[in-house]
Amino acid sequence: MNTHSEWAVEANGLVKTFGSNRAVDGVDLRVATGTVYGVLGPNGAGKTTTISMLATLLRPDAGSARIFGHDVQREAQVVRQLIGVTGQYASVDEGLSATENLVLFSRLLGLGRREARIKAQDLLEEFGLTEAASRPLKNFSGGMRRRLDLAASLISQPPLIFLDEPTTGLDPRTRAQMWETIRRLVAGGSTVLLTTQYLDEADQLADRIAVIDRGRVVAEGTGDELKAQVGSSSLELRLGDPLLADRALNIAERVLGVAGTRSAEAARITVPLSDPERVTDLLIELRGDDIRLEEFSVHKPSLDDVFLSITGKPTEDTAEDAADSTTSTREGAHA
Amino acid sequence: MSTTTAPQKRARTSAGTTIVPAHERALKNRVSLTETVRHSLTMAYRGLLKIRRTPEQLFDVTLQPIIFTVMFTYIFGGAISGDVASYLPVIIPGILVQTVITTSIVTGTQLREDMDKGVFDRFRSLPIARIAPLSGALLADTIRYAIATTLTFVMGFIMGYRPHGGIWAVIGAALLVIVCAWAISWIFAFFGVIARSASSVQGISMIILFPLTFLSNAFVPVDTMPSWLQWFVNINPVSHLVTSVRDVLNTGAFTSEAFLPLIGAAVIVAIFAPLTVRAYMRRA
Image 1 (cartoon, helix red, strand yellow):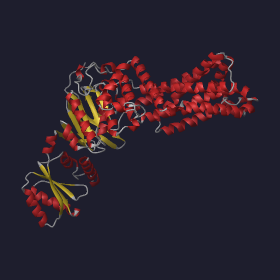
Image 2: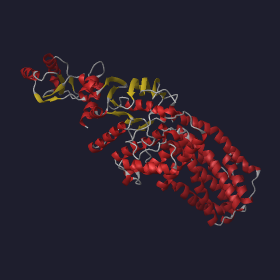
Image 3: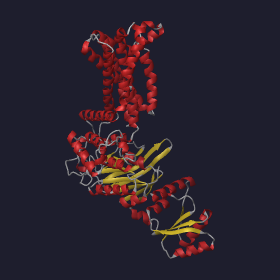
Image 4: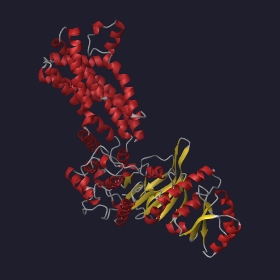
């Protein structure tokens, strides 16, 4: 028995280097027991590597992590008894049927032959896979595979569940089902740490969110806290001539008093908007400067804006890097 | 360990029910020996399930004994022993050893393929003995050796081979070959763990195995070879295994020569099991 820890996950300065690439570069995380925590970031931000270290699959090069107070390196076997891991690519045996998979994992977790069968049947029923139970996995759709994967993670009813991009590649309906399942898990007392590229997913599910980019946590807080960083609404302008983007940004900053951001293809600029009244002034100014608009719209704040304003700014980084992260953000927003 | 993580007998749904908080669970950081054995057996059971699901992976252990035994016997029989009947006591033990040992390569290639799959991540995240996926795979493969052995004997029997040693000699020789193939599979398992791809495992293994099985007394009497080759053939461990199997089958006697391969097998395991396990643990 160990001391009762209120933190399900405590990570301090986690680092993982692959060759010259610092995939994870000093990540700190605190996940409270019984909550959903979202790790949000574009492809290659270090989300999967972070989860792998927390789930004892990878050894950190530096830093430490504790799961319910148990060190992931010194007490790896204890940690494994407390977690369920659902990978980005379904971690089930392609060579076996759904039932055989669940029976195999149940047996490995110490269930008897009969118990394992019952357990498998229960889980298949719960995840709507009963009809496909004995079919080979190669004929499974992405959503079925993901459900089976999650079912396999729940056999031991672990208090902490890692979900690595649980809905990537799923159609909207299957995605909604997955969200429902995740909410049910938390209602039962589980702690969930999920990674996602989808900003609305983190917004919908997570109590707290860490925005991660290039191996670092660049922002952390509740969805509302993060939104507060970008103002109440935002104005999006699509310019007729992308070359005028810089001038348009200057005018916007002068009129609205805040700096805007520019999208990858440069024709689109986004500016935080605290007072809708001022839009008229801005539009008149733009007309006066001969900057033609293709389209304009006012957005309620979304995490997209947060993400763009935190990671998309072409600050000291190369323009190419900045373009990459804005592109991913937009992909996330579309899906 | 596993019994603590085993779901407490609760309501039928698992996602909806309350789960036991971390601090109320009895946890331990060690996996006992009995658990290790049990996990290995479960992993071996997985290997058997896979064979049942994809029977085509048994092609090599079914077709090779049938084709090779018939082919070599009728091609070489007349030239080497005068006629097929008198060649059978020479060739059956030889082809048995060659077939079963070649089969053990698959252990390495399958292990490599397996370790690249997503399911391996799950195995590594479970509170099971780290060694279980490896030991389970090696254990399940003995089934393949048994199939290859049986089929070779059946083919020999059909062609008219009646070992003097009788049924017990056949069983003894079969066990000898299976144990030695299992020991040798550790070598290929090692390659499987350290290699980058399954095809490179196959490549390395064939380069090693081809000379070892053919530059032996498996098919041809040693005294027909040039003396420099005889030197190699006589120190080749495969030759010793073939000789032992022949002695057992054709005389029914377990001579001291018969135990030599077992010592060799023990040496191989003593060297390659720790090497493989260490390399494997570093990855697992």
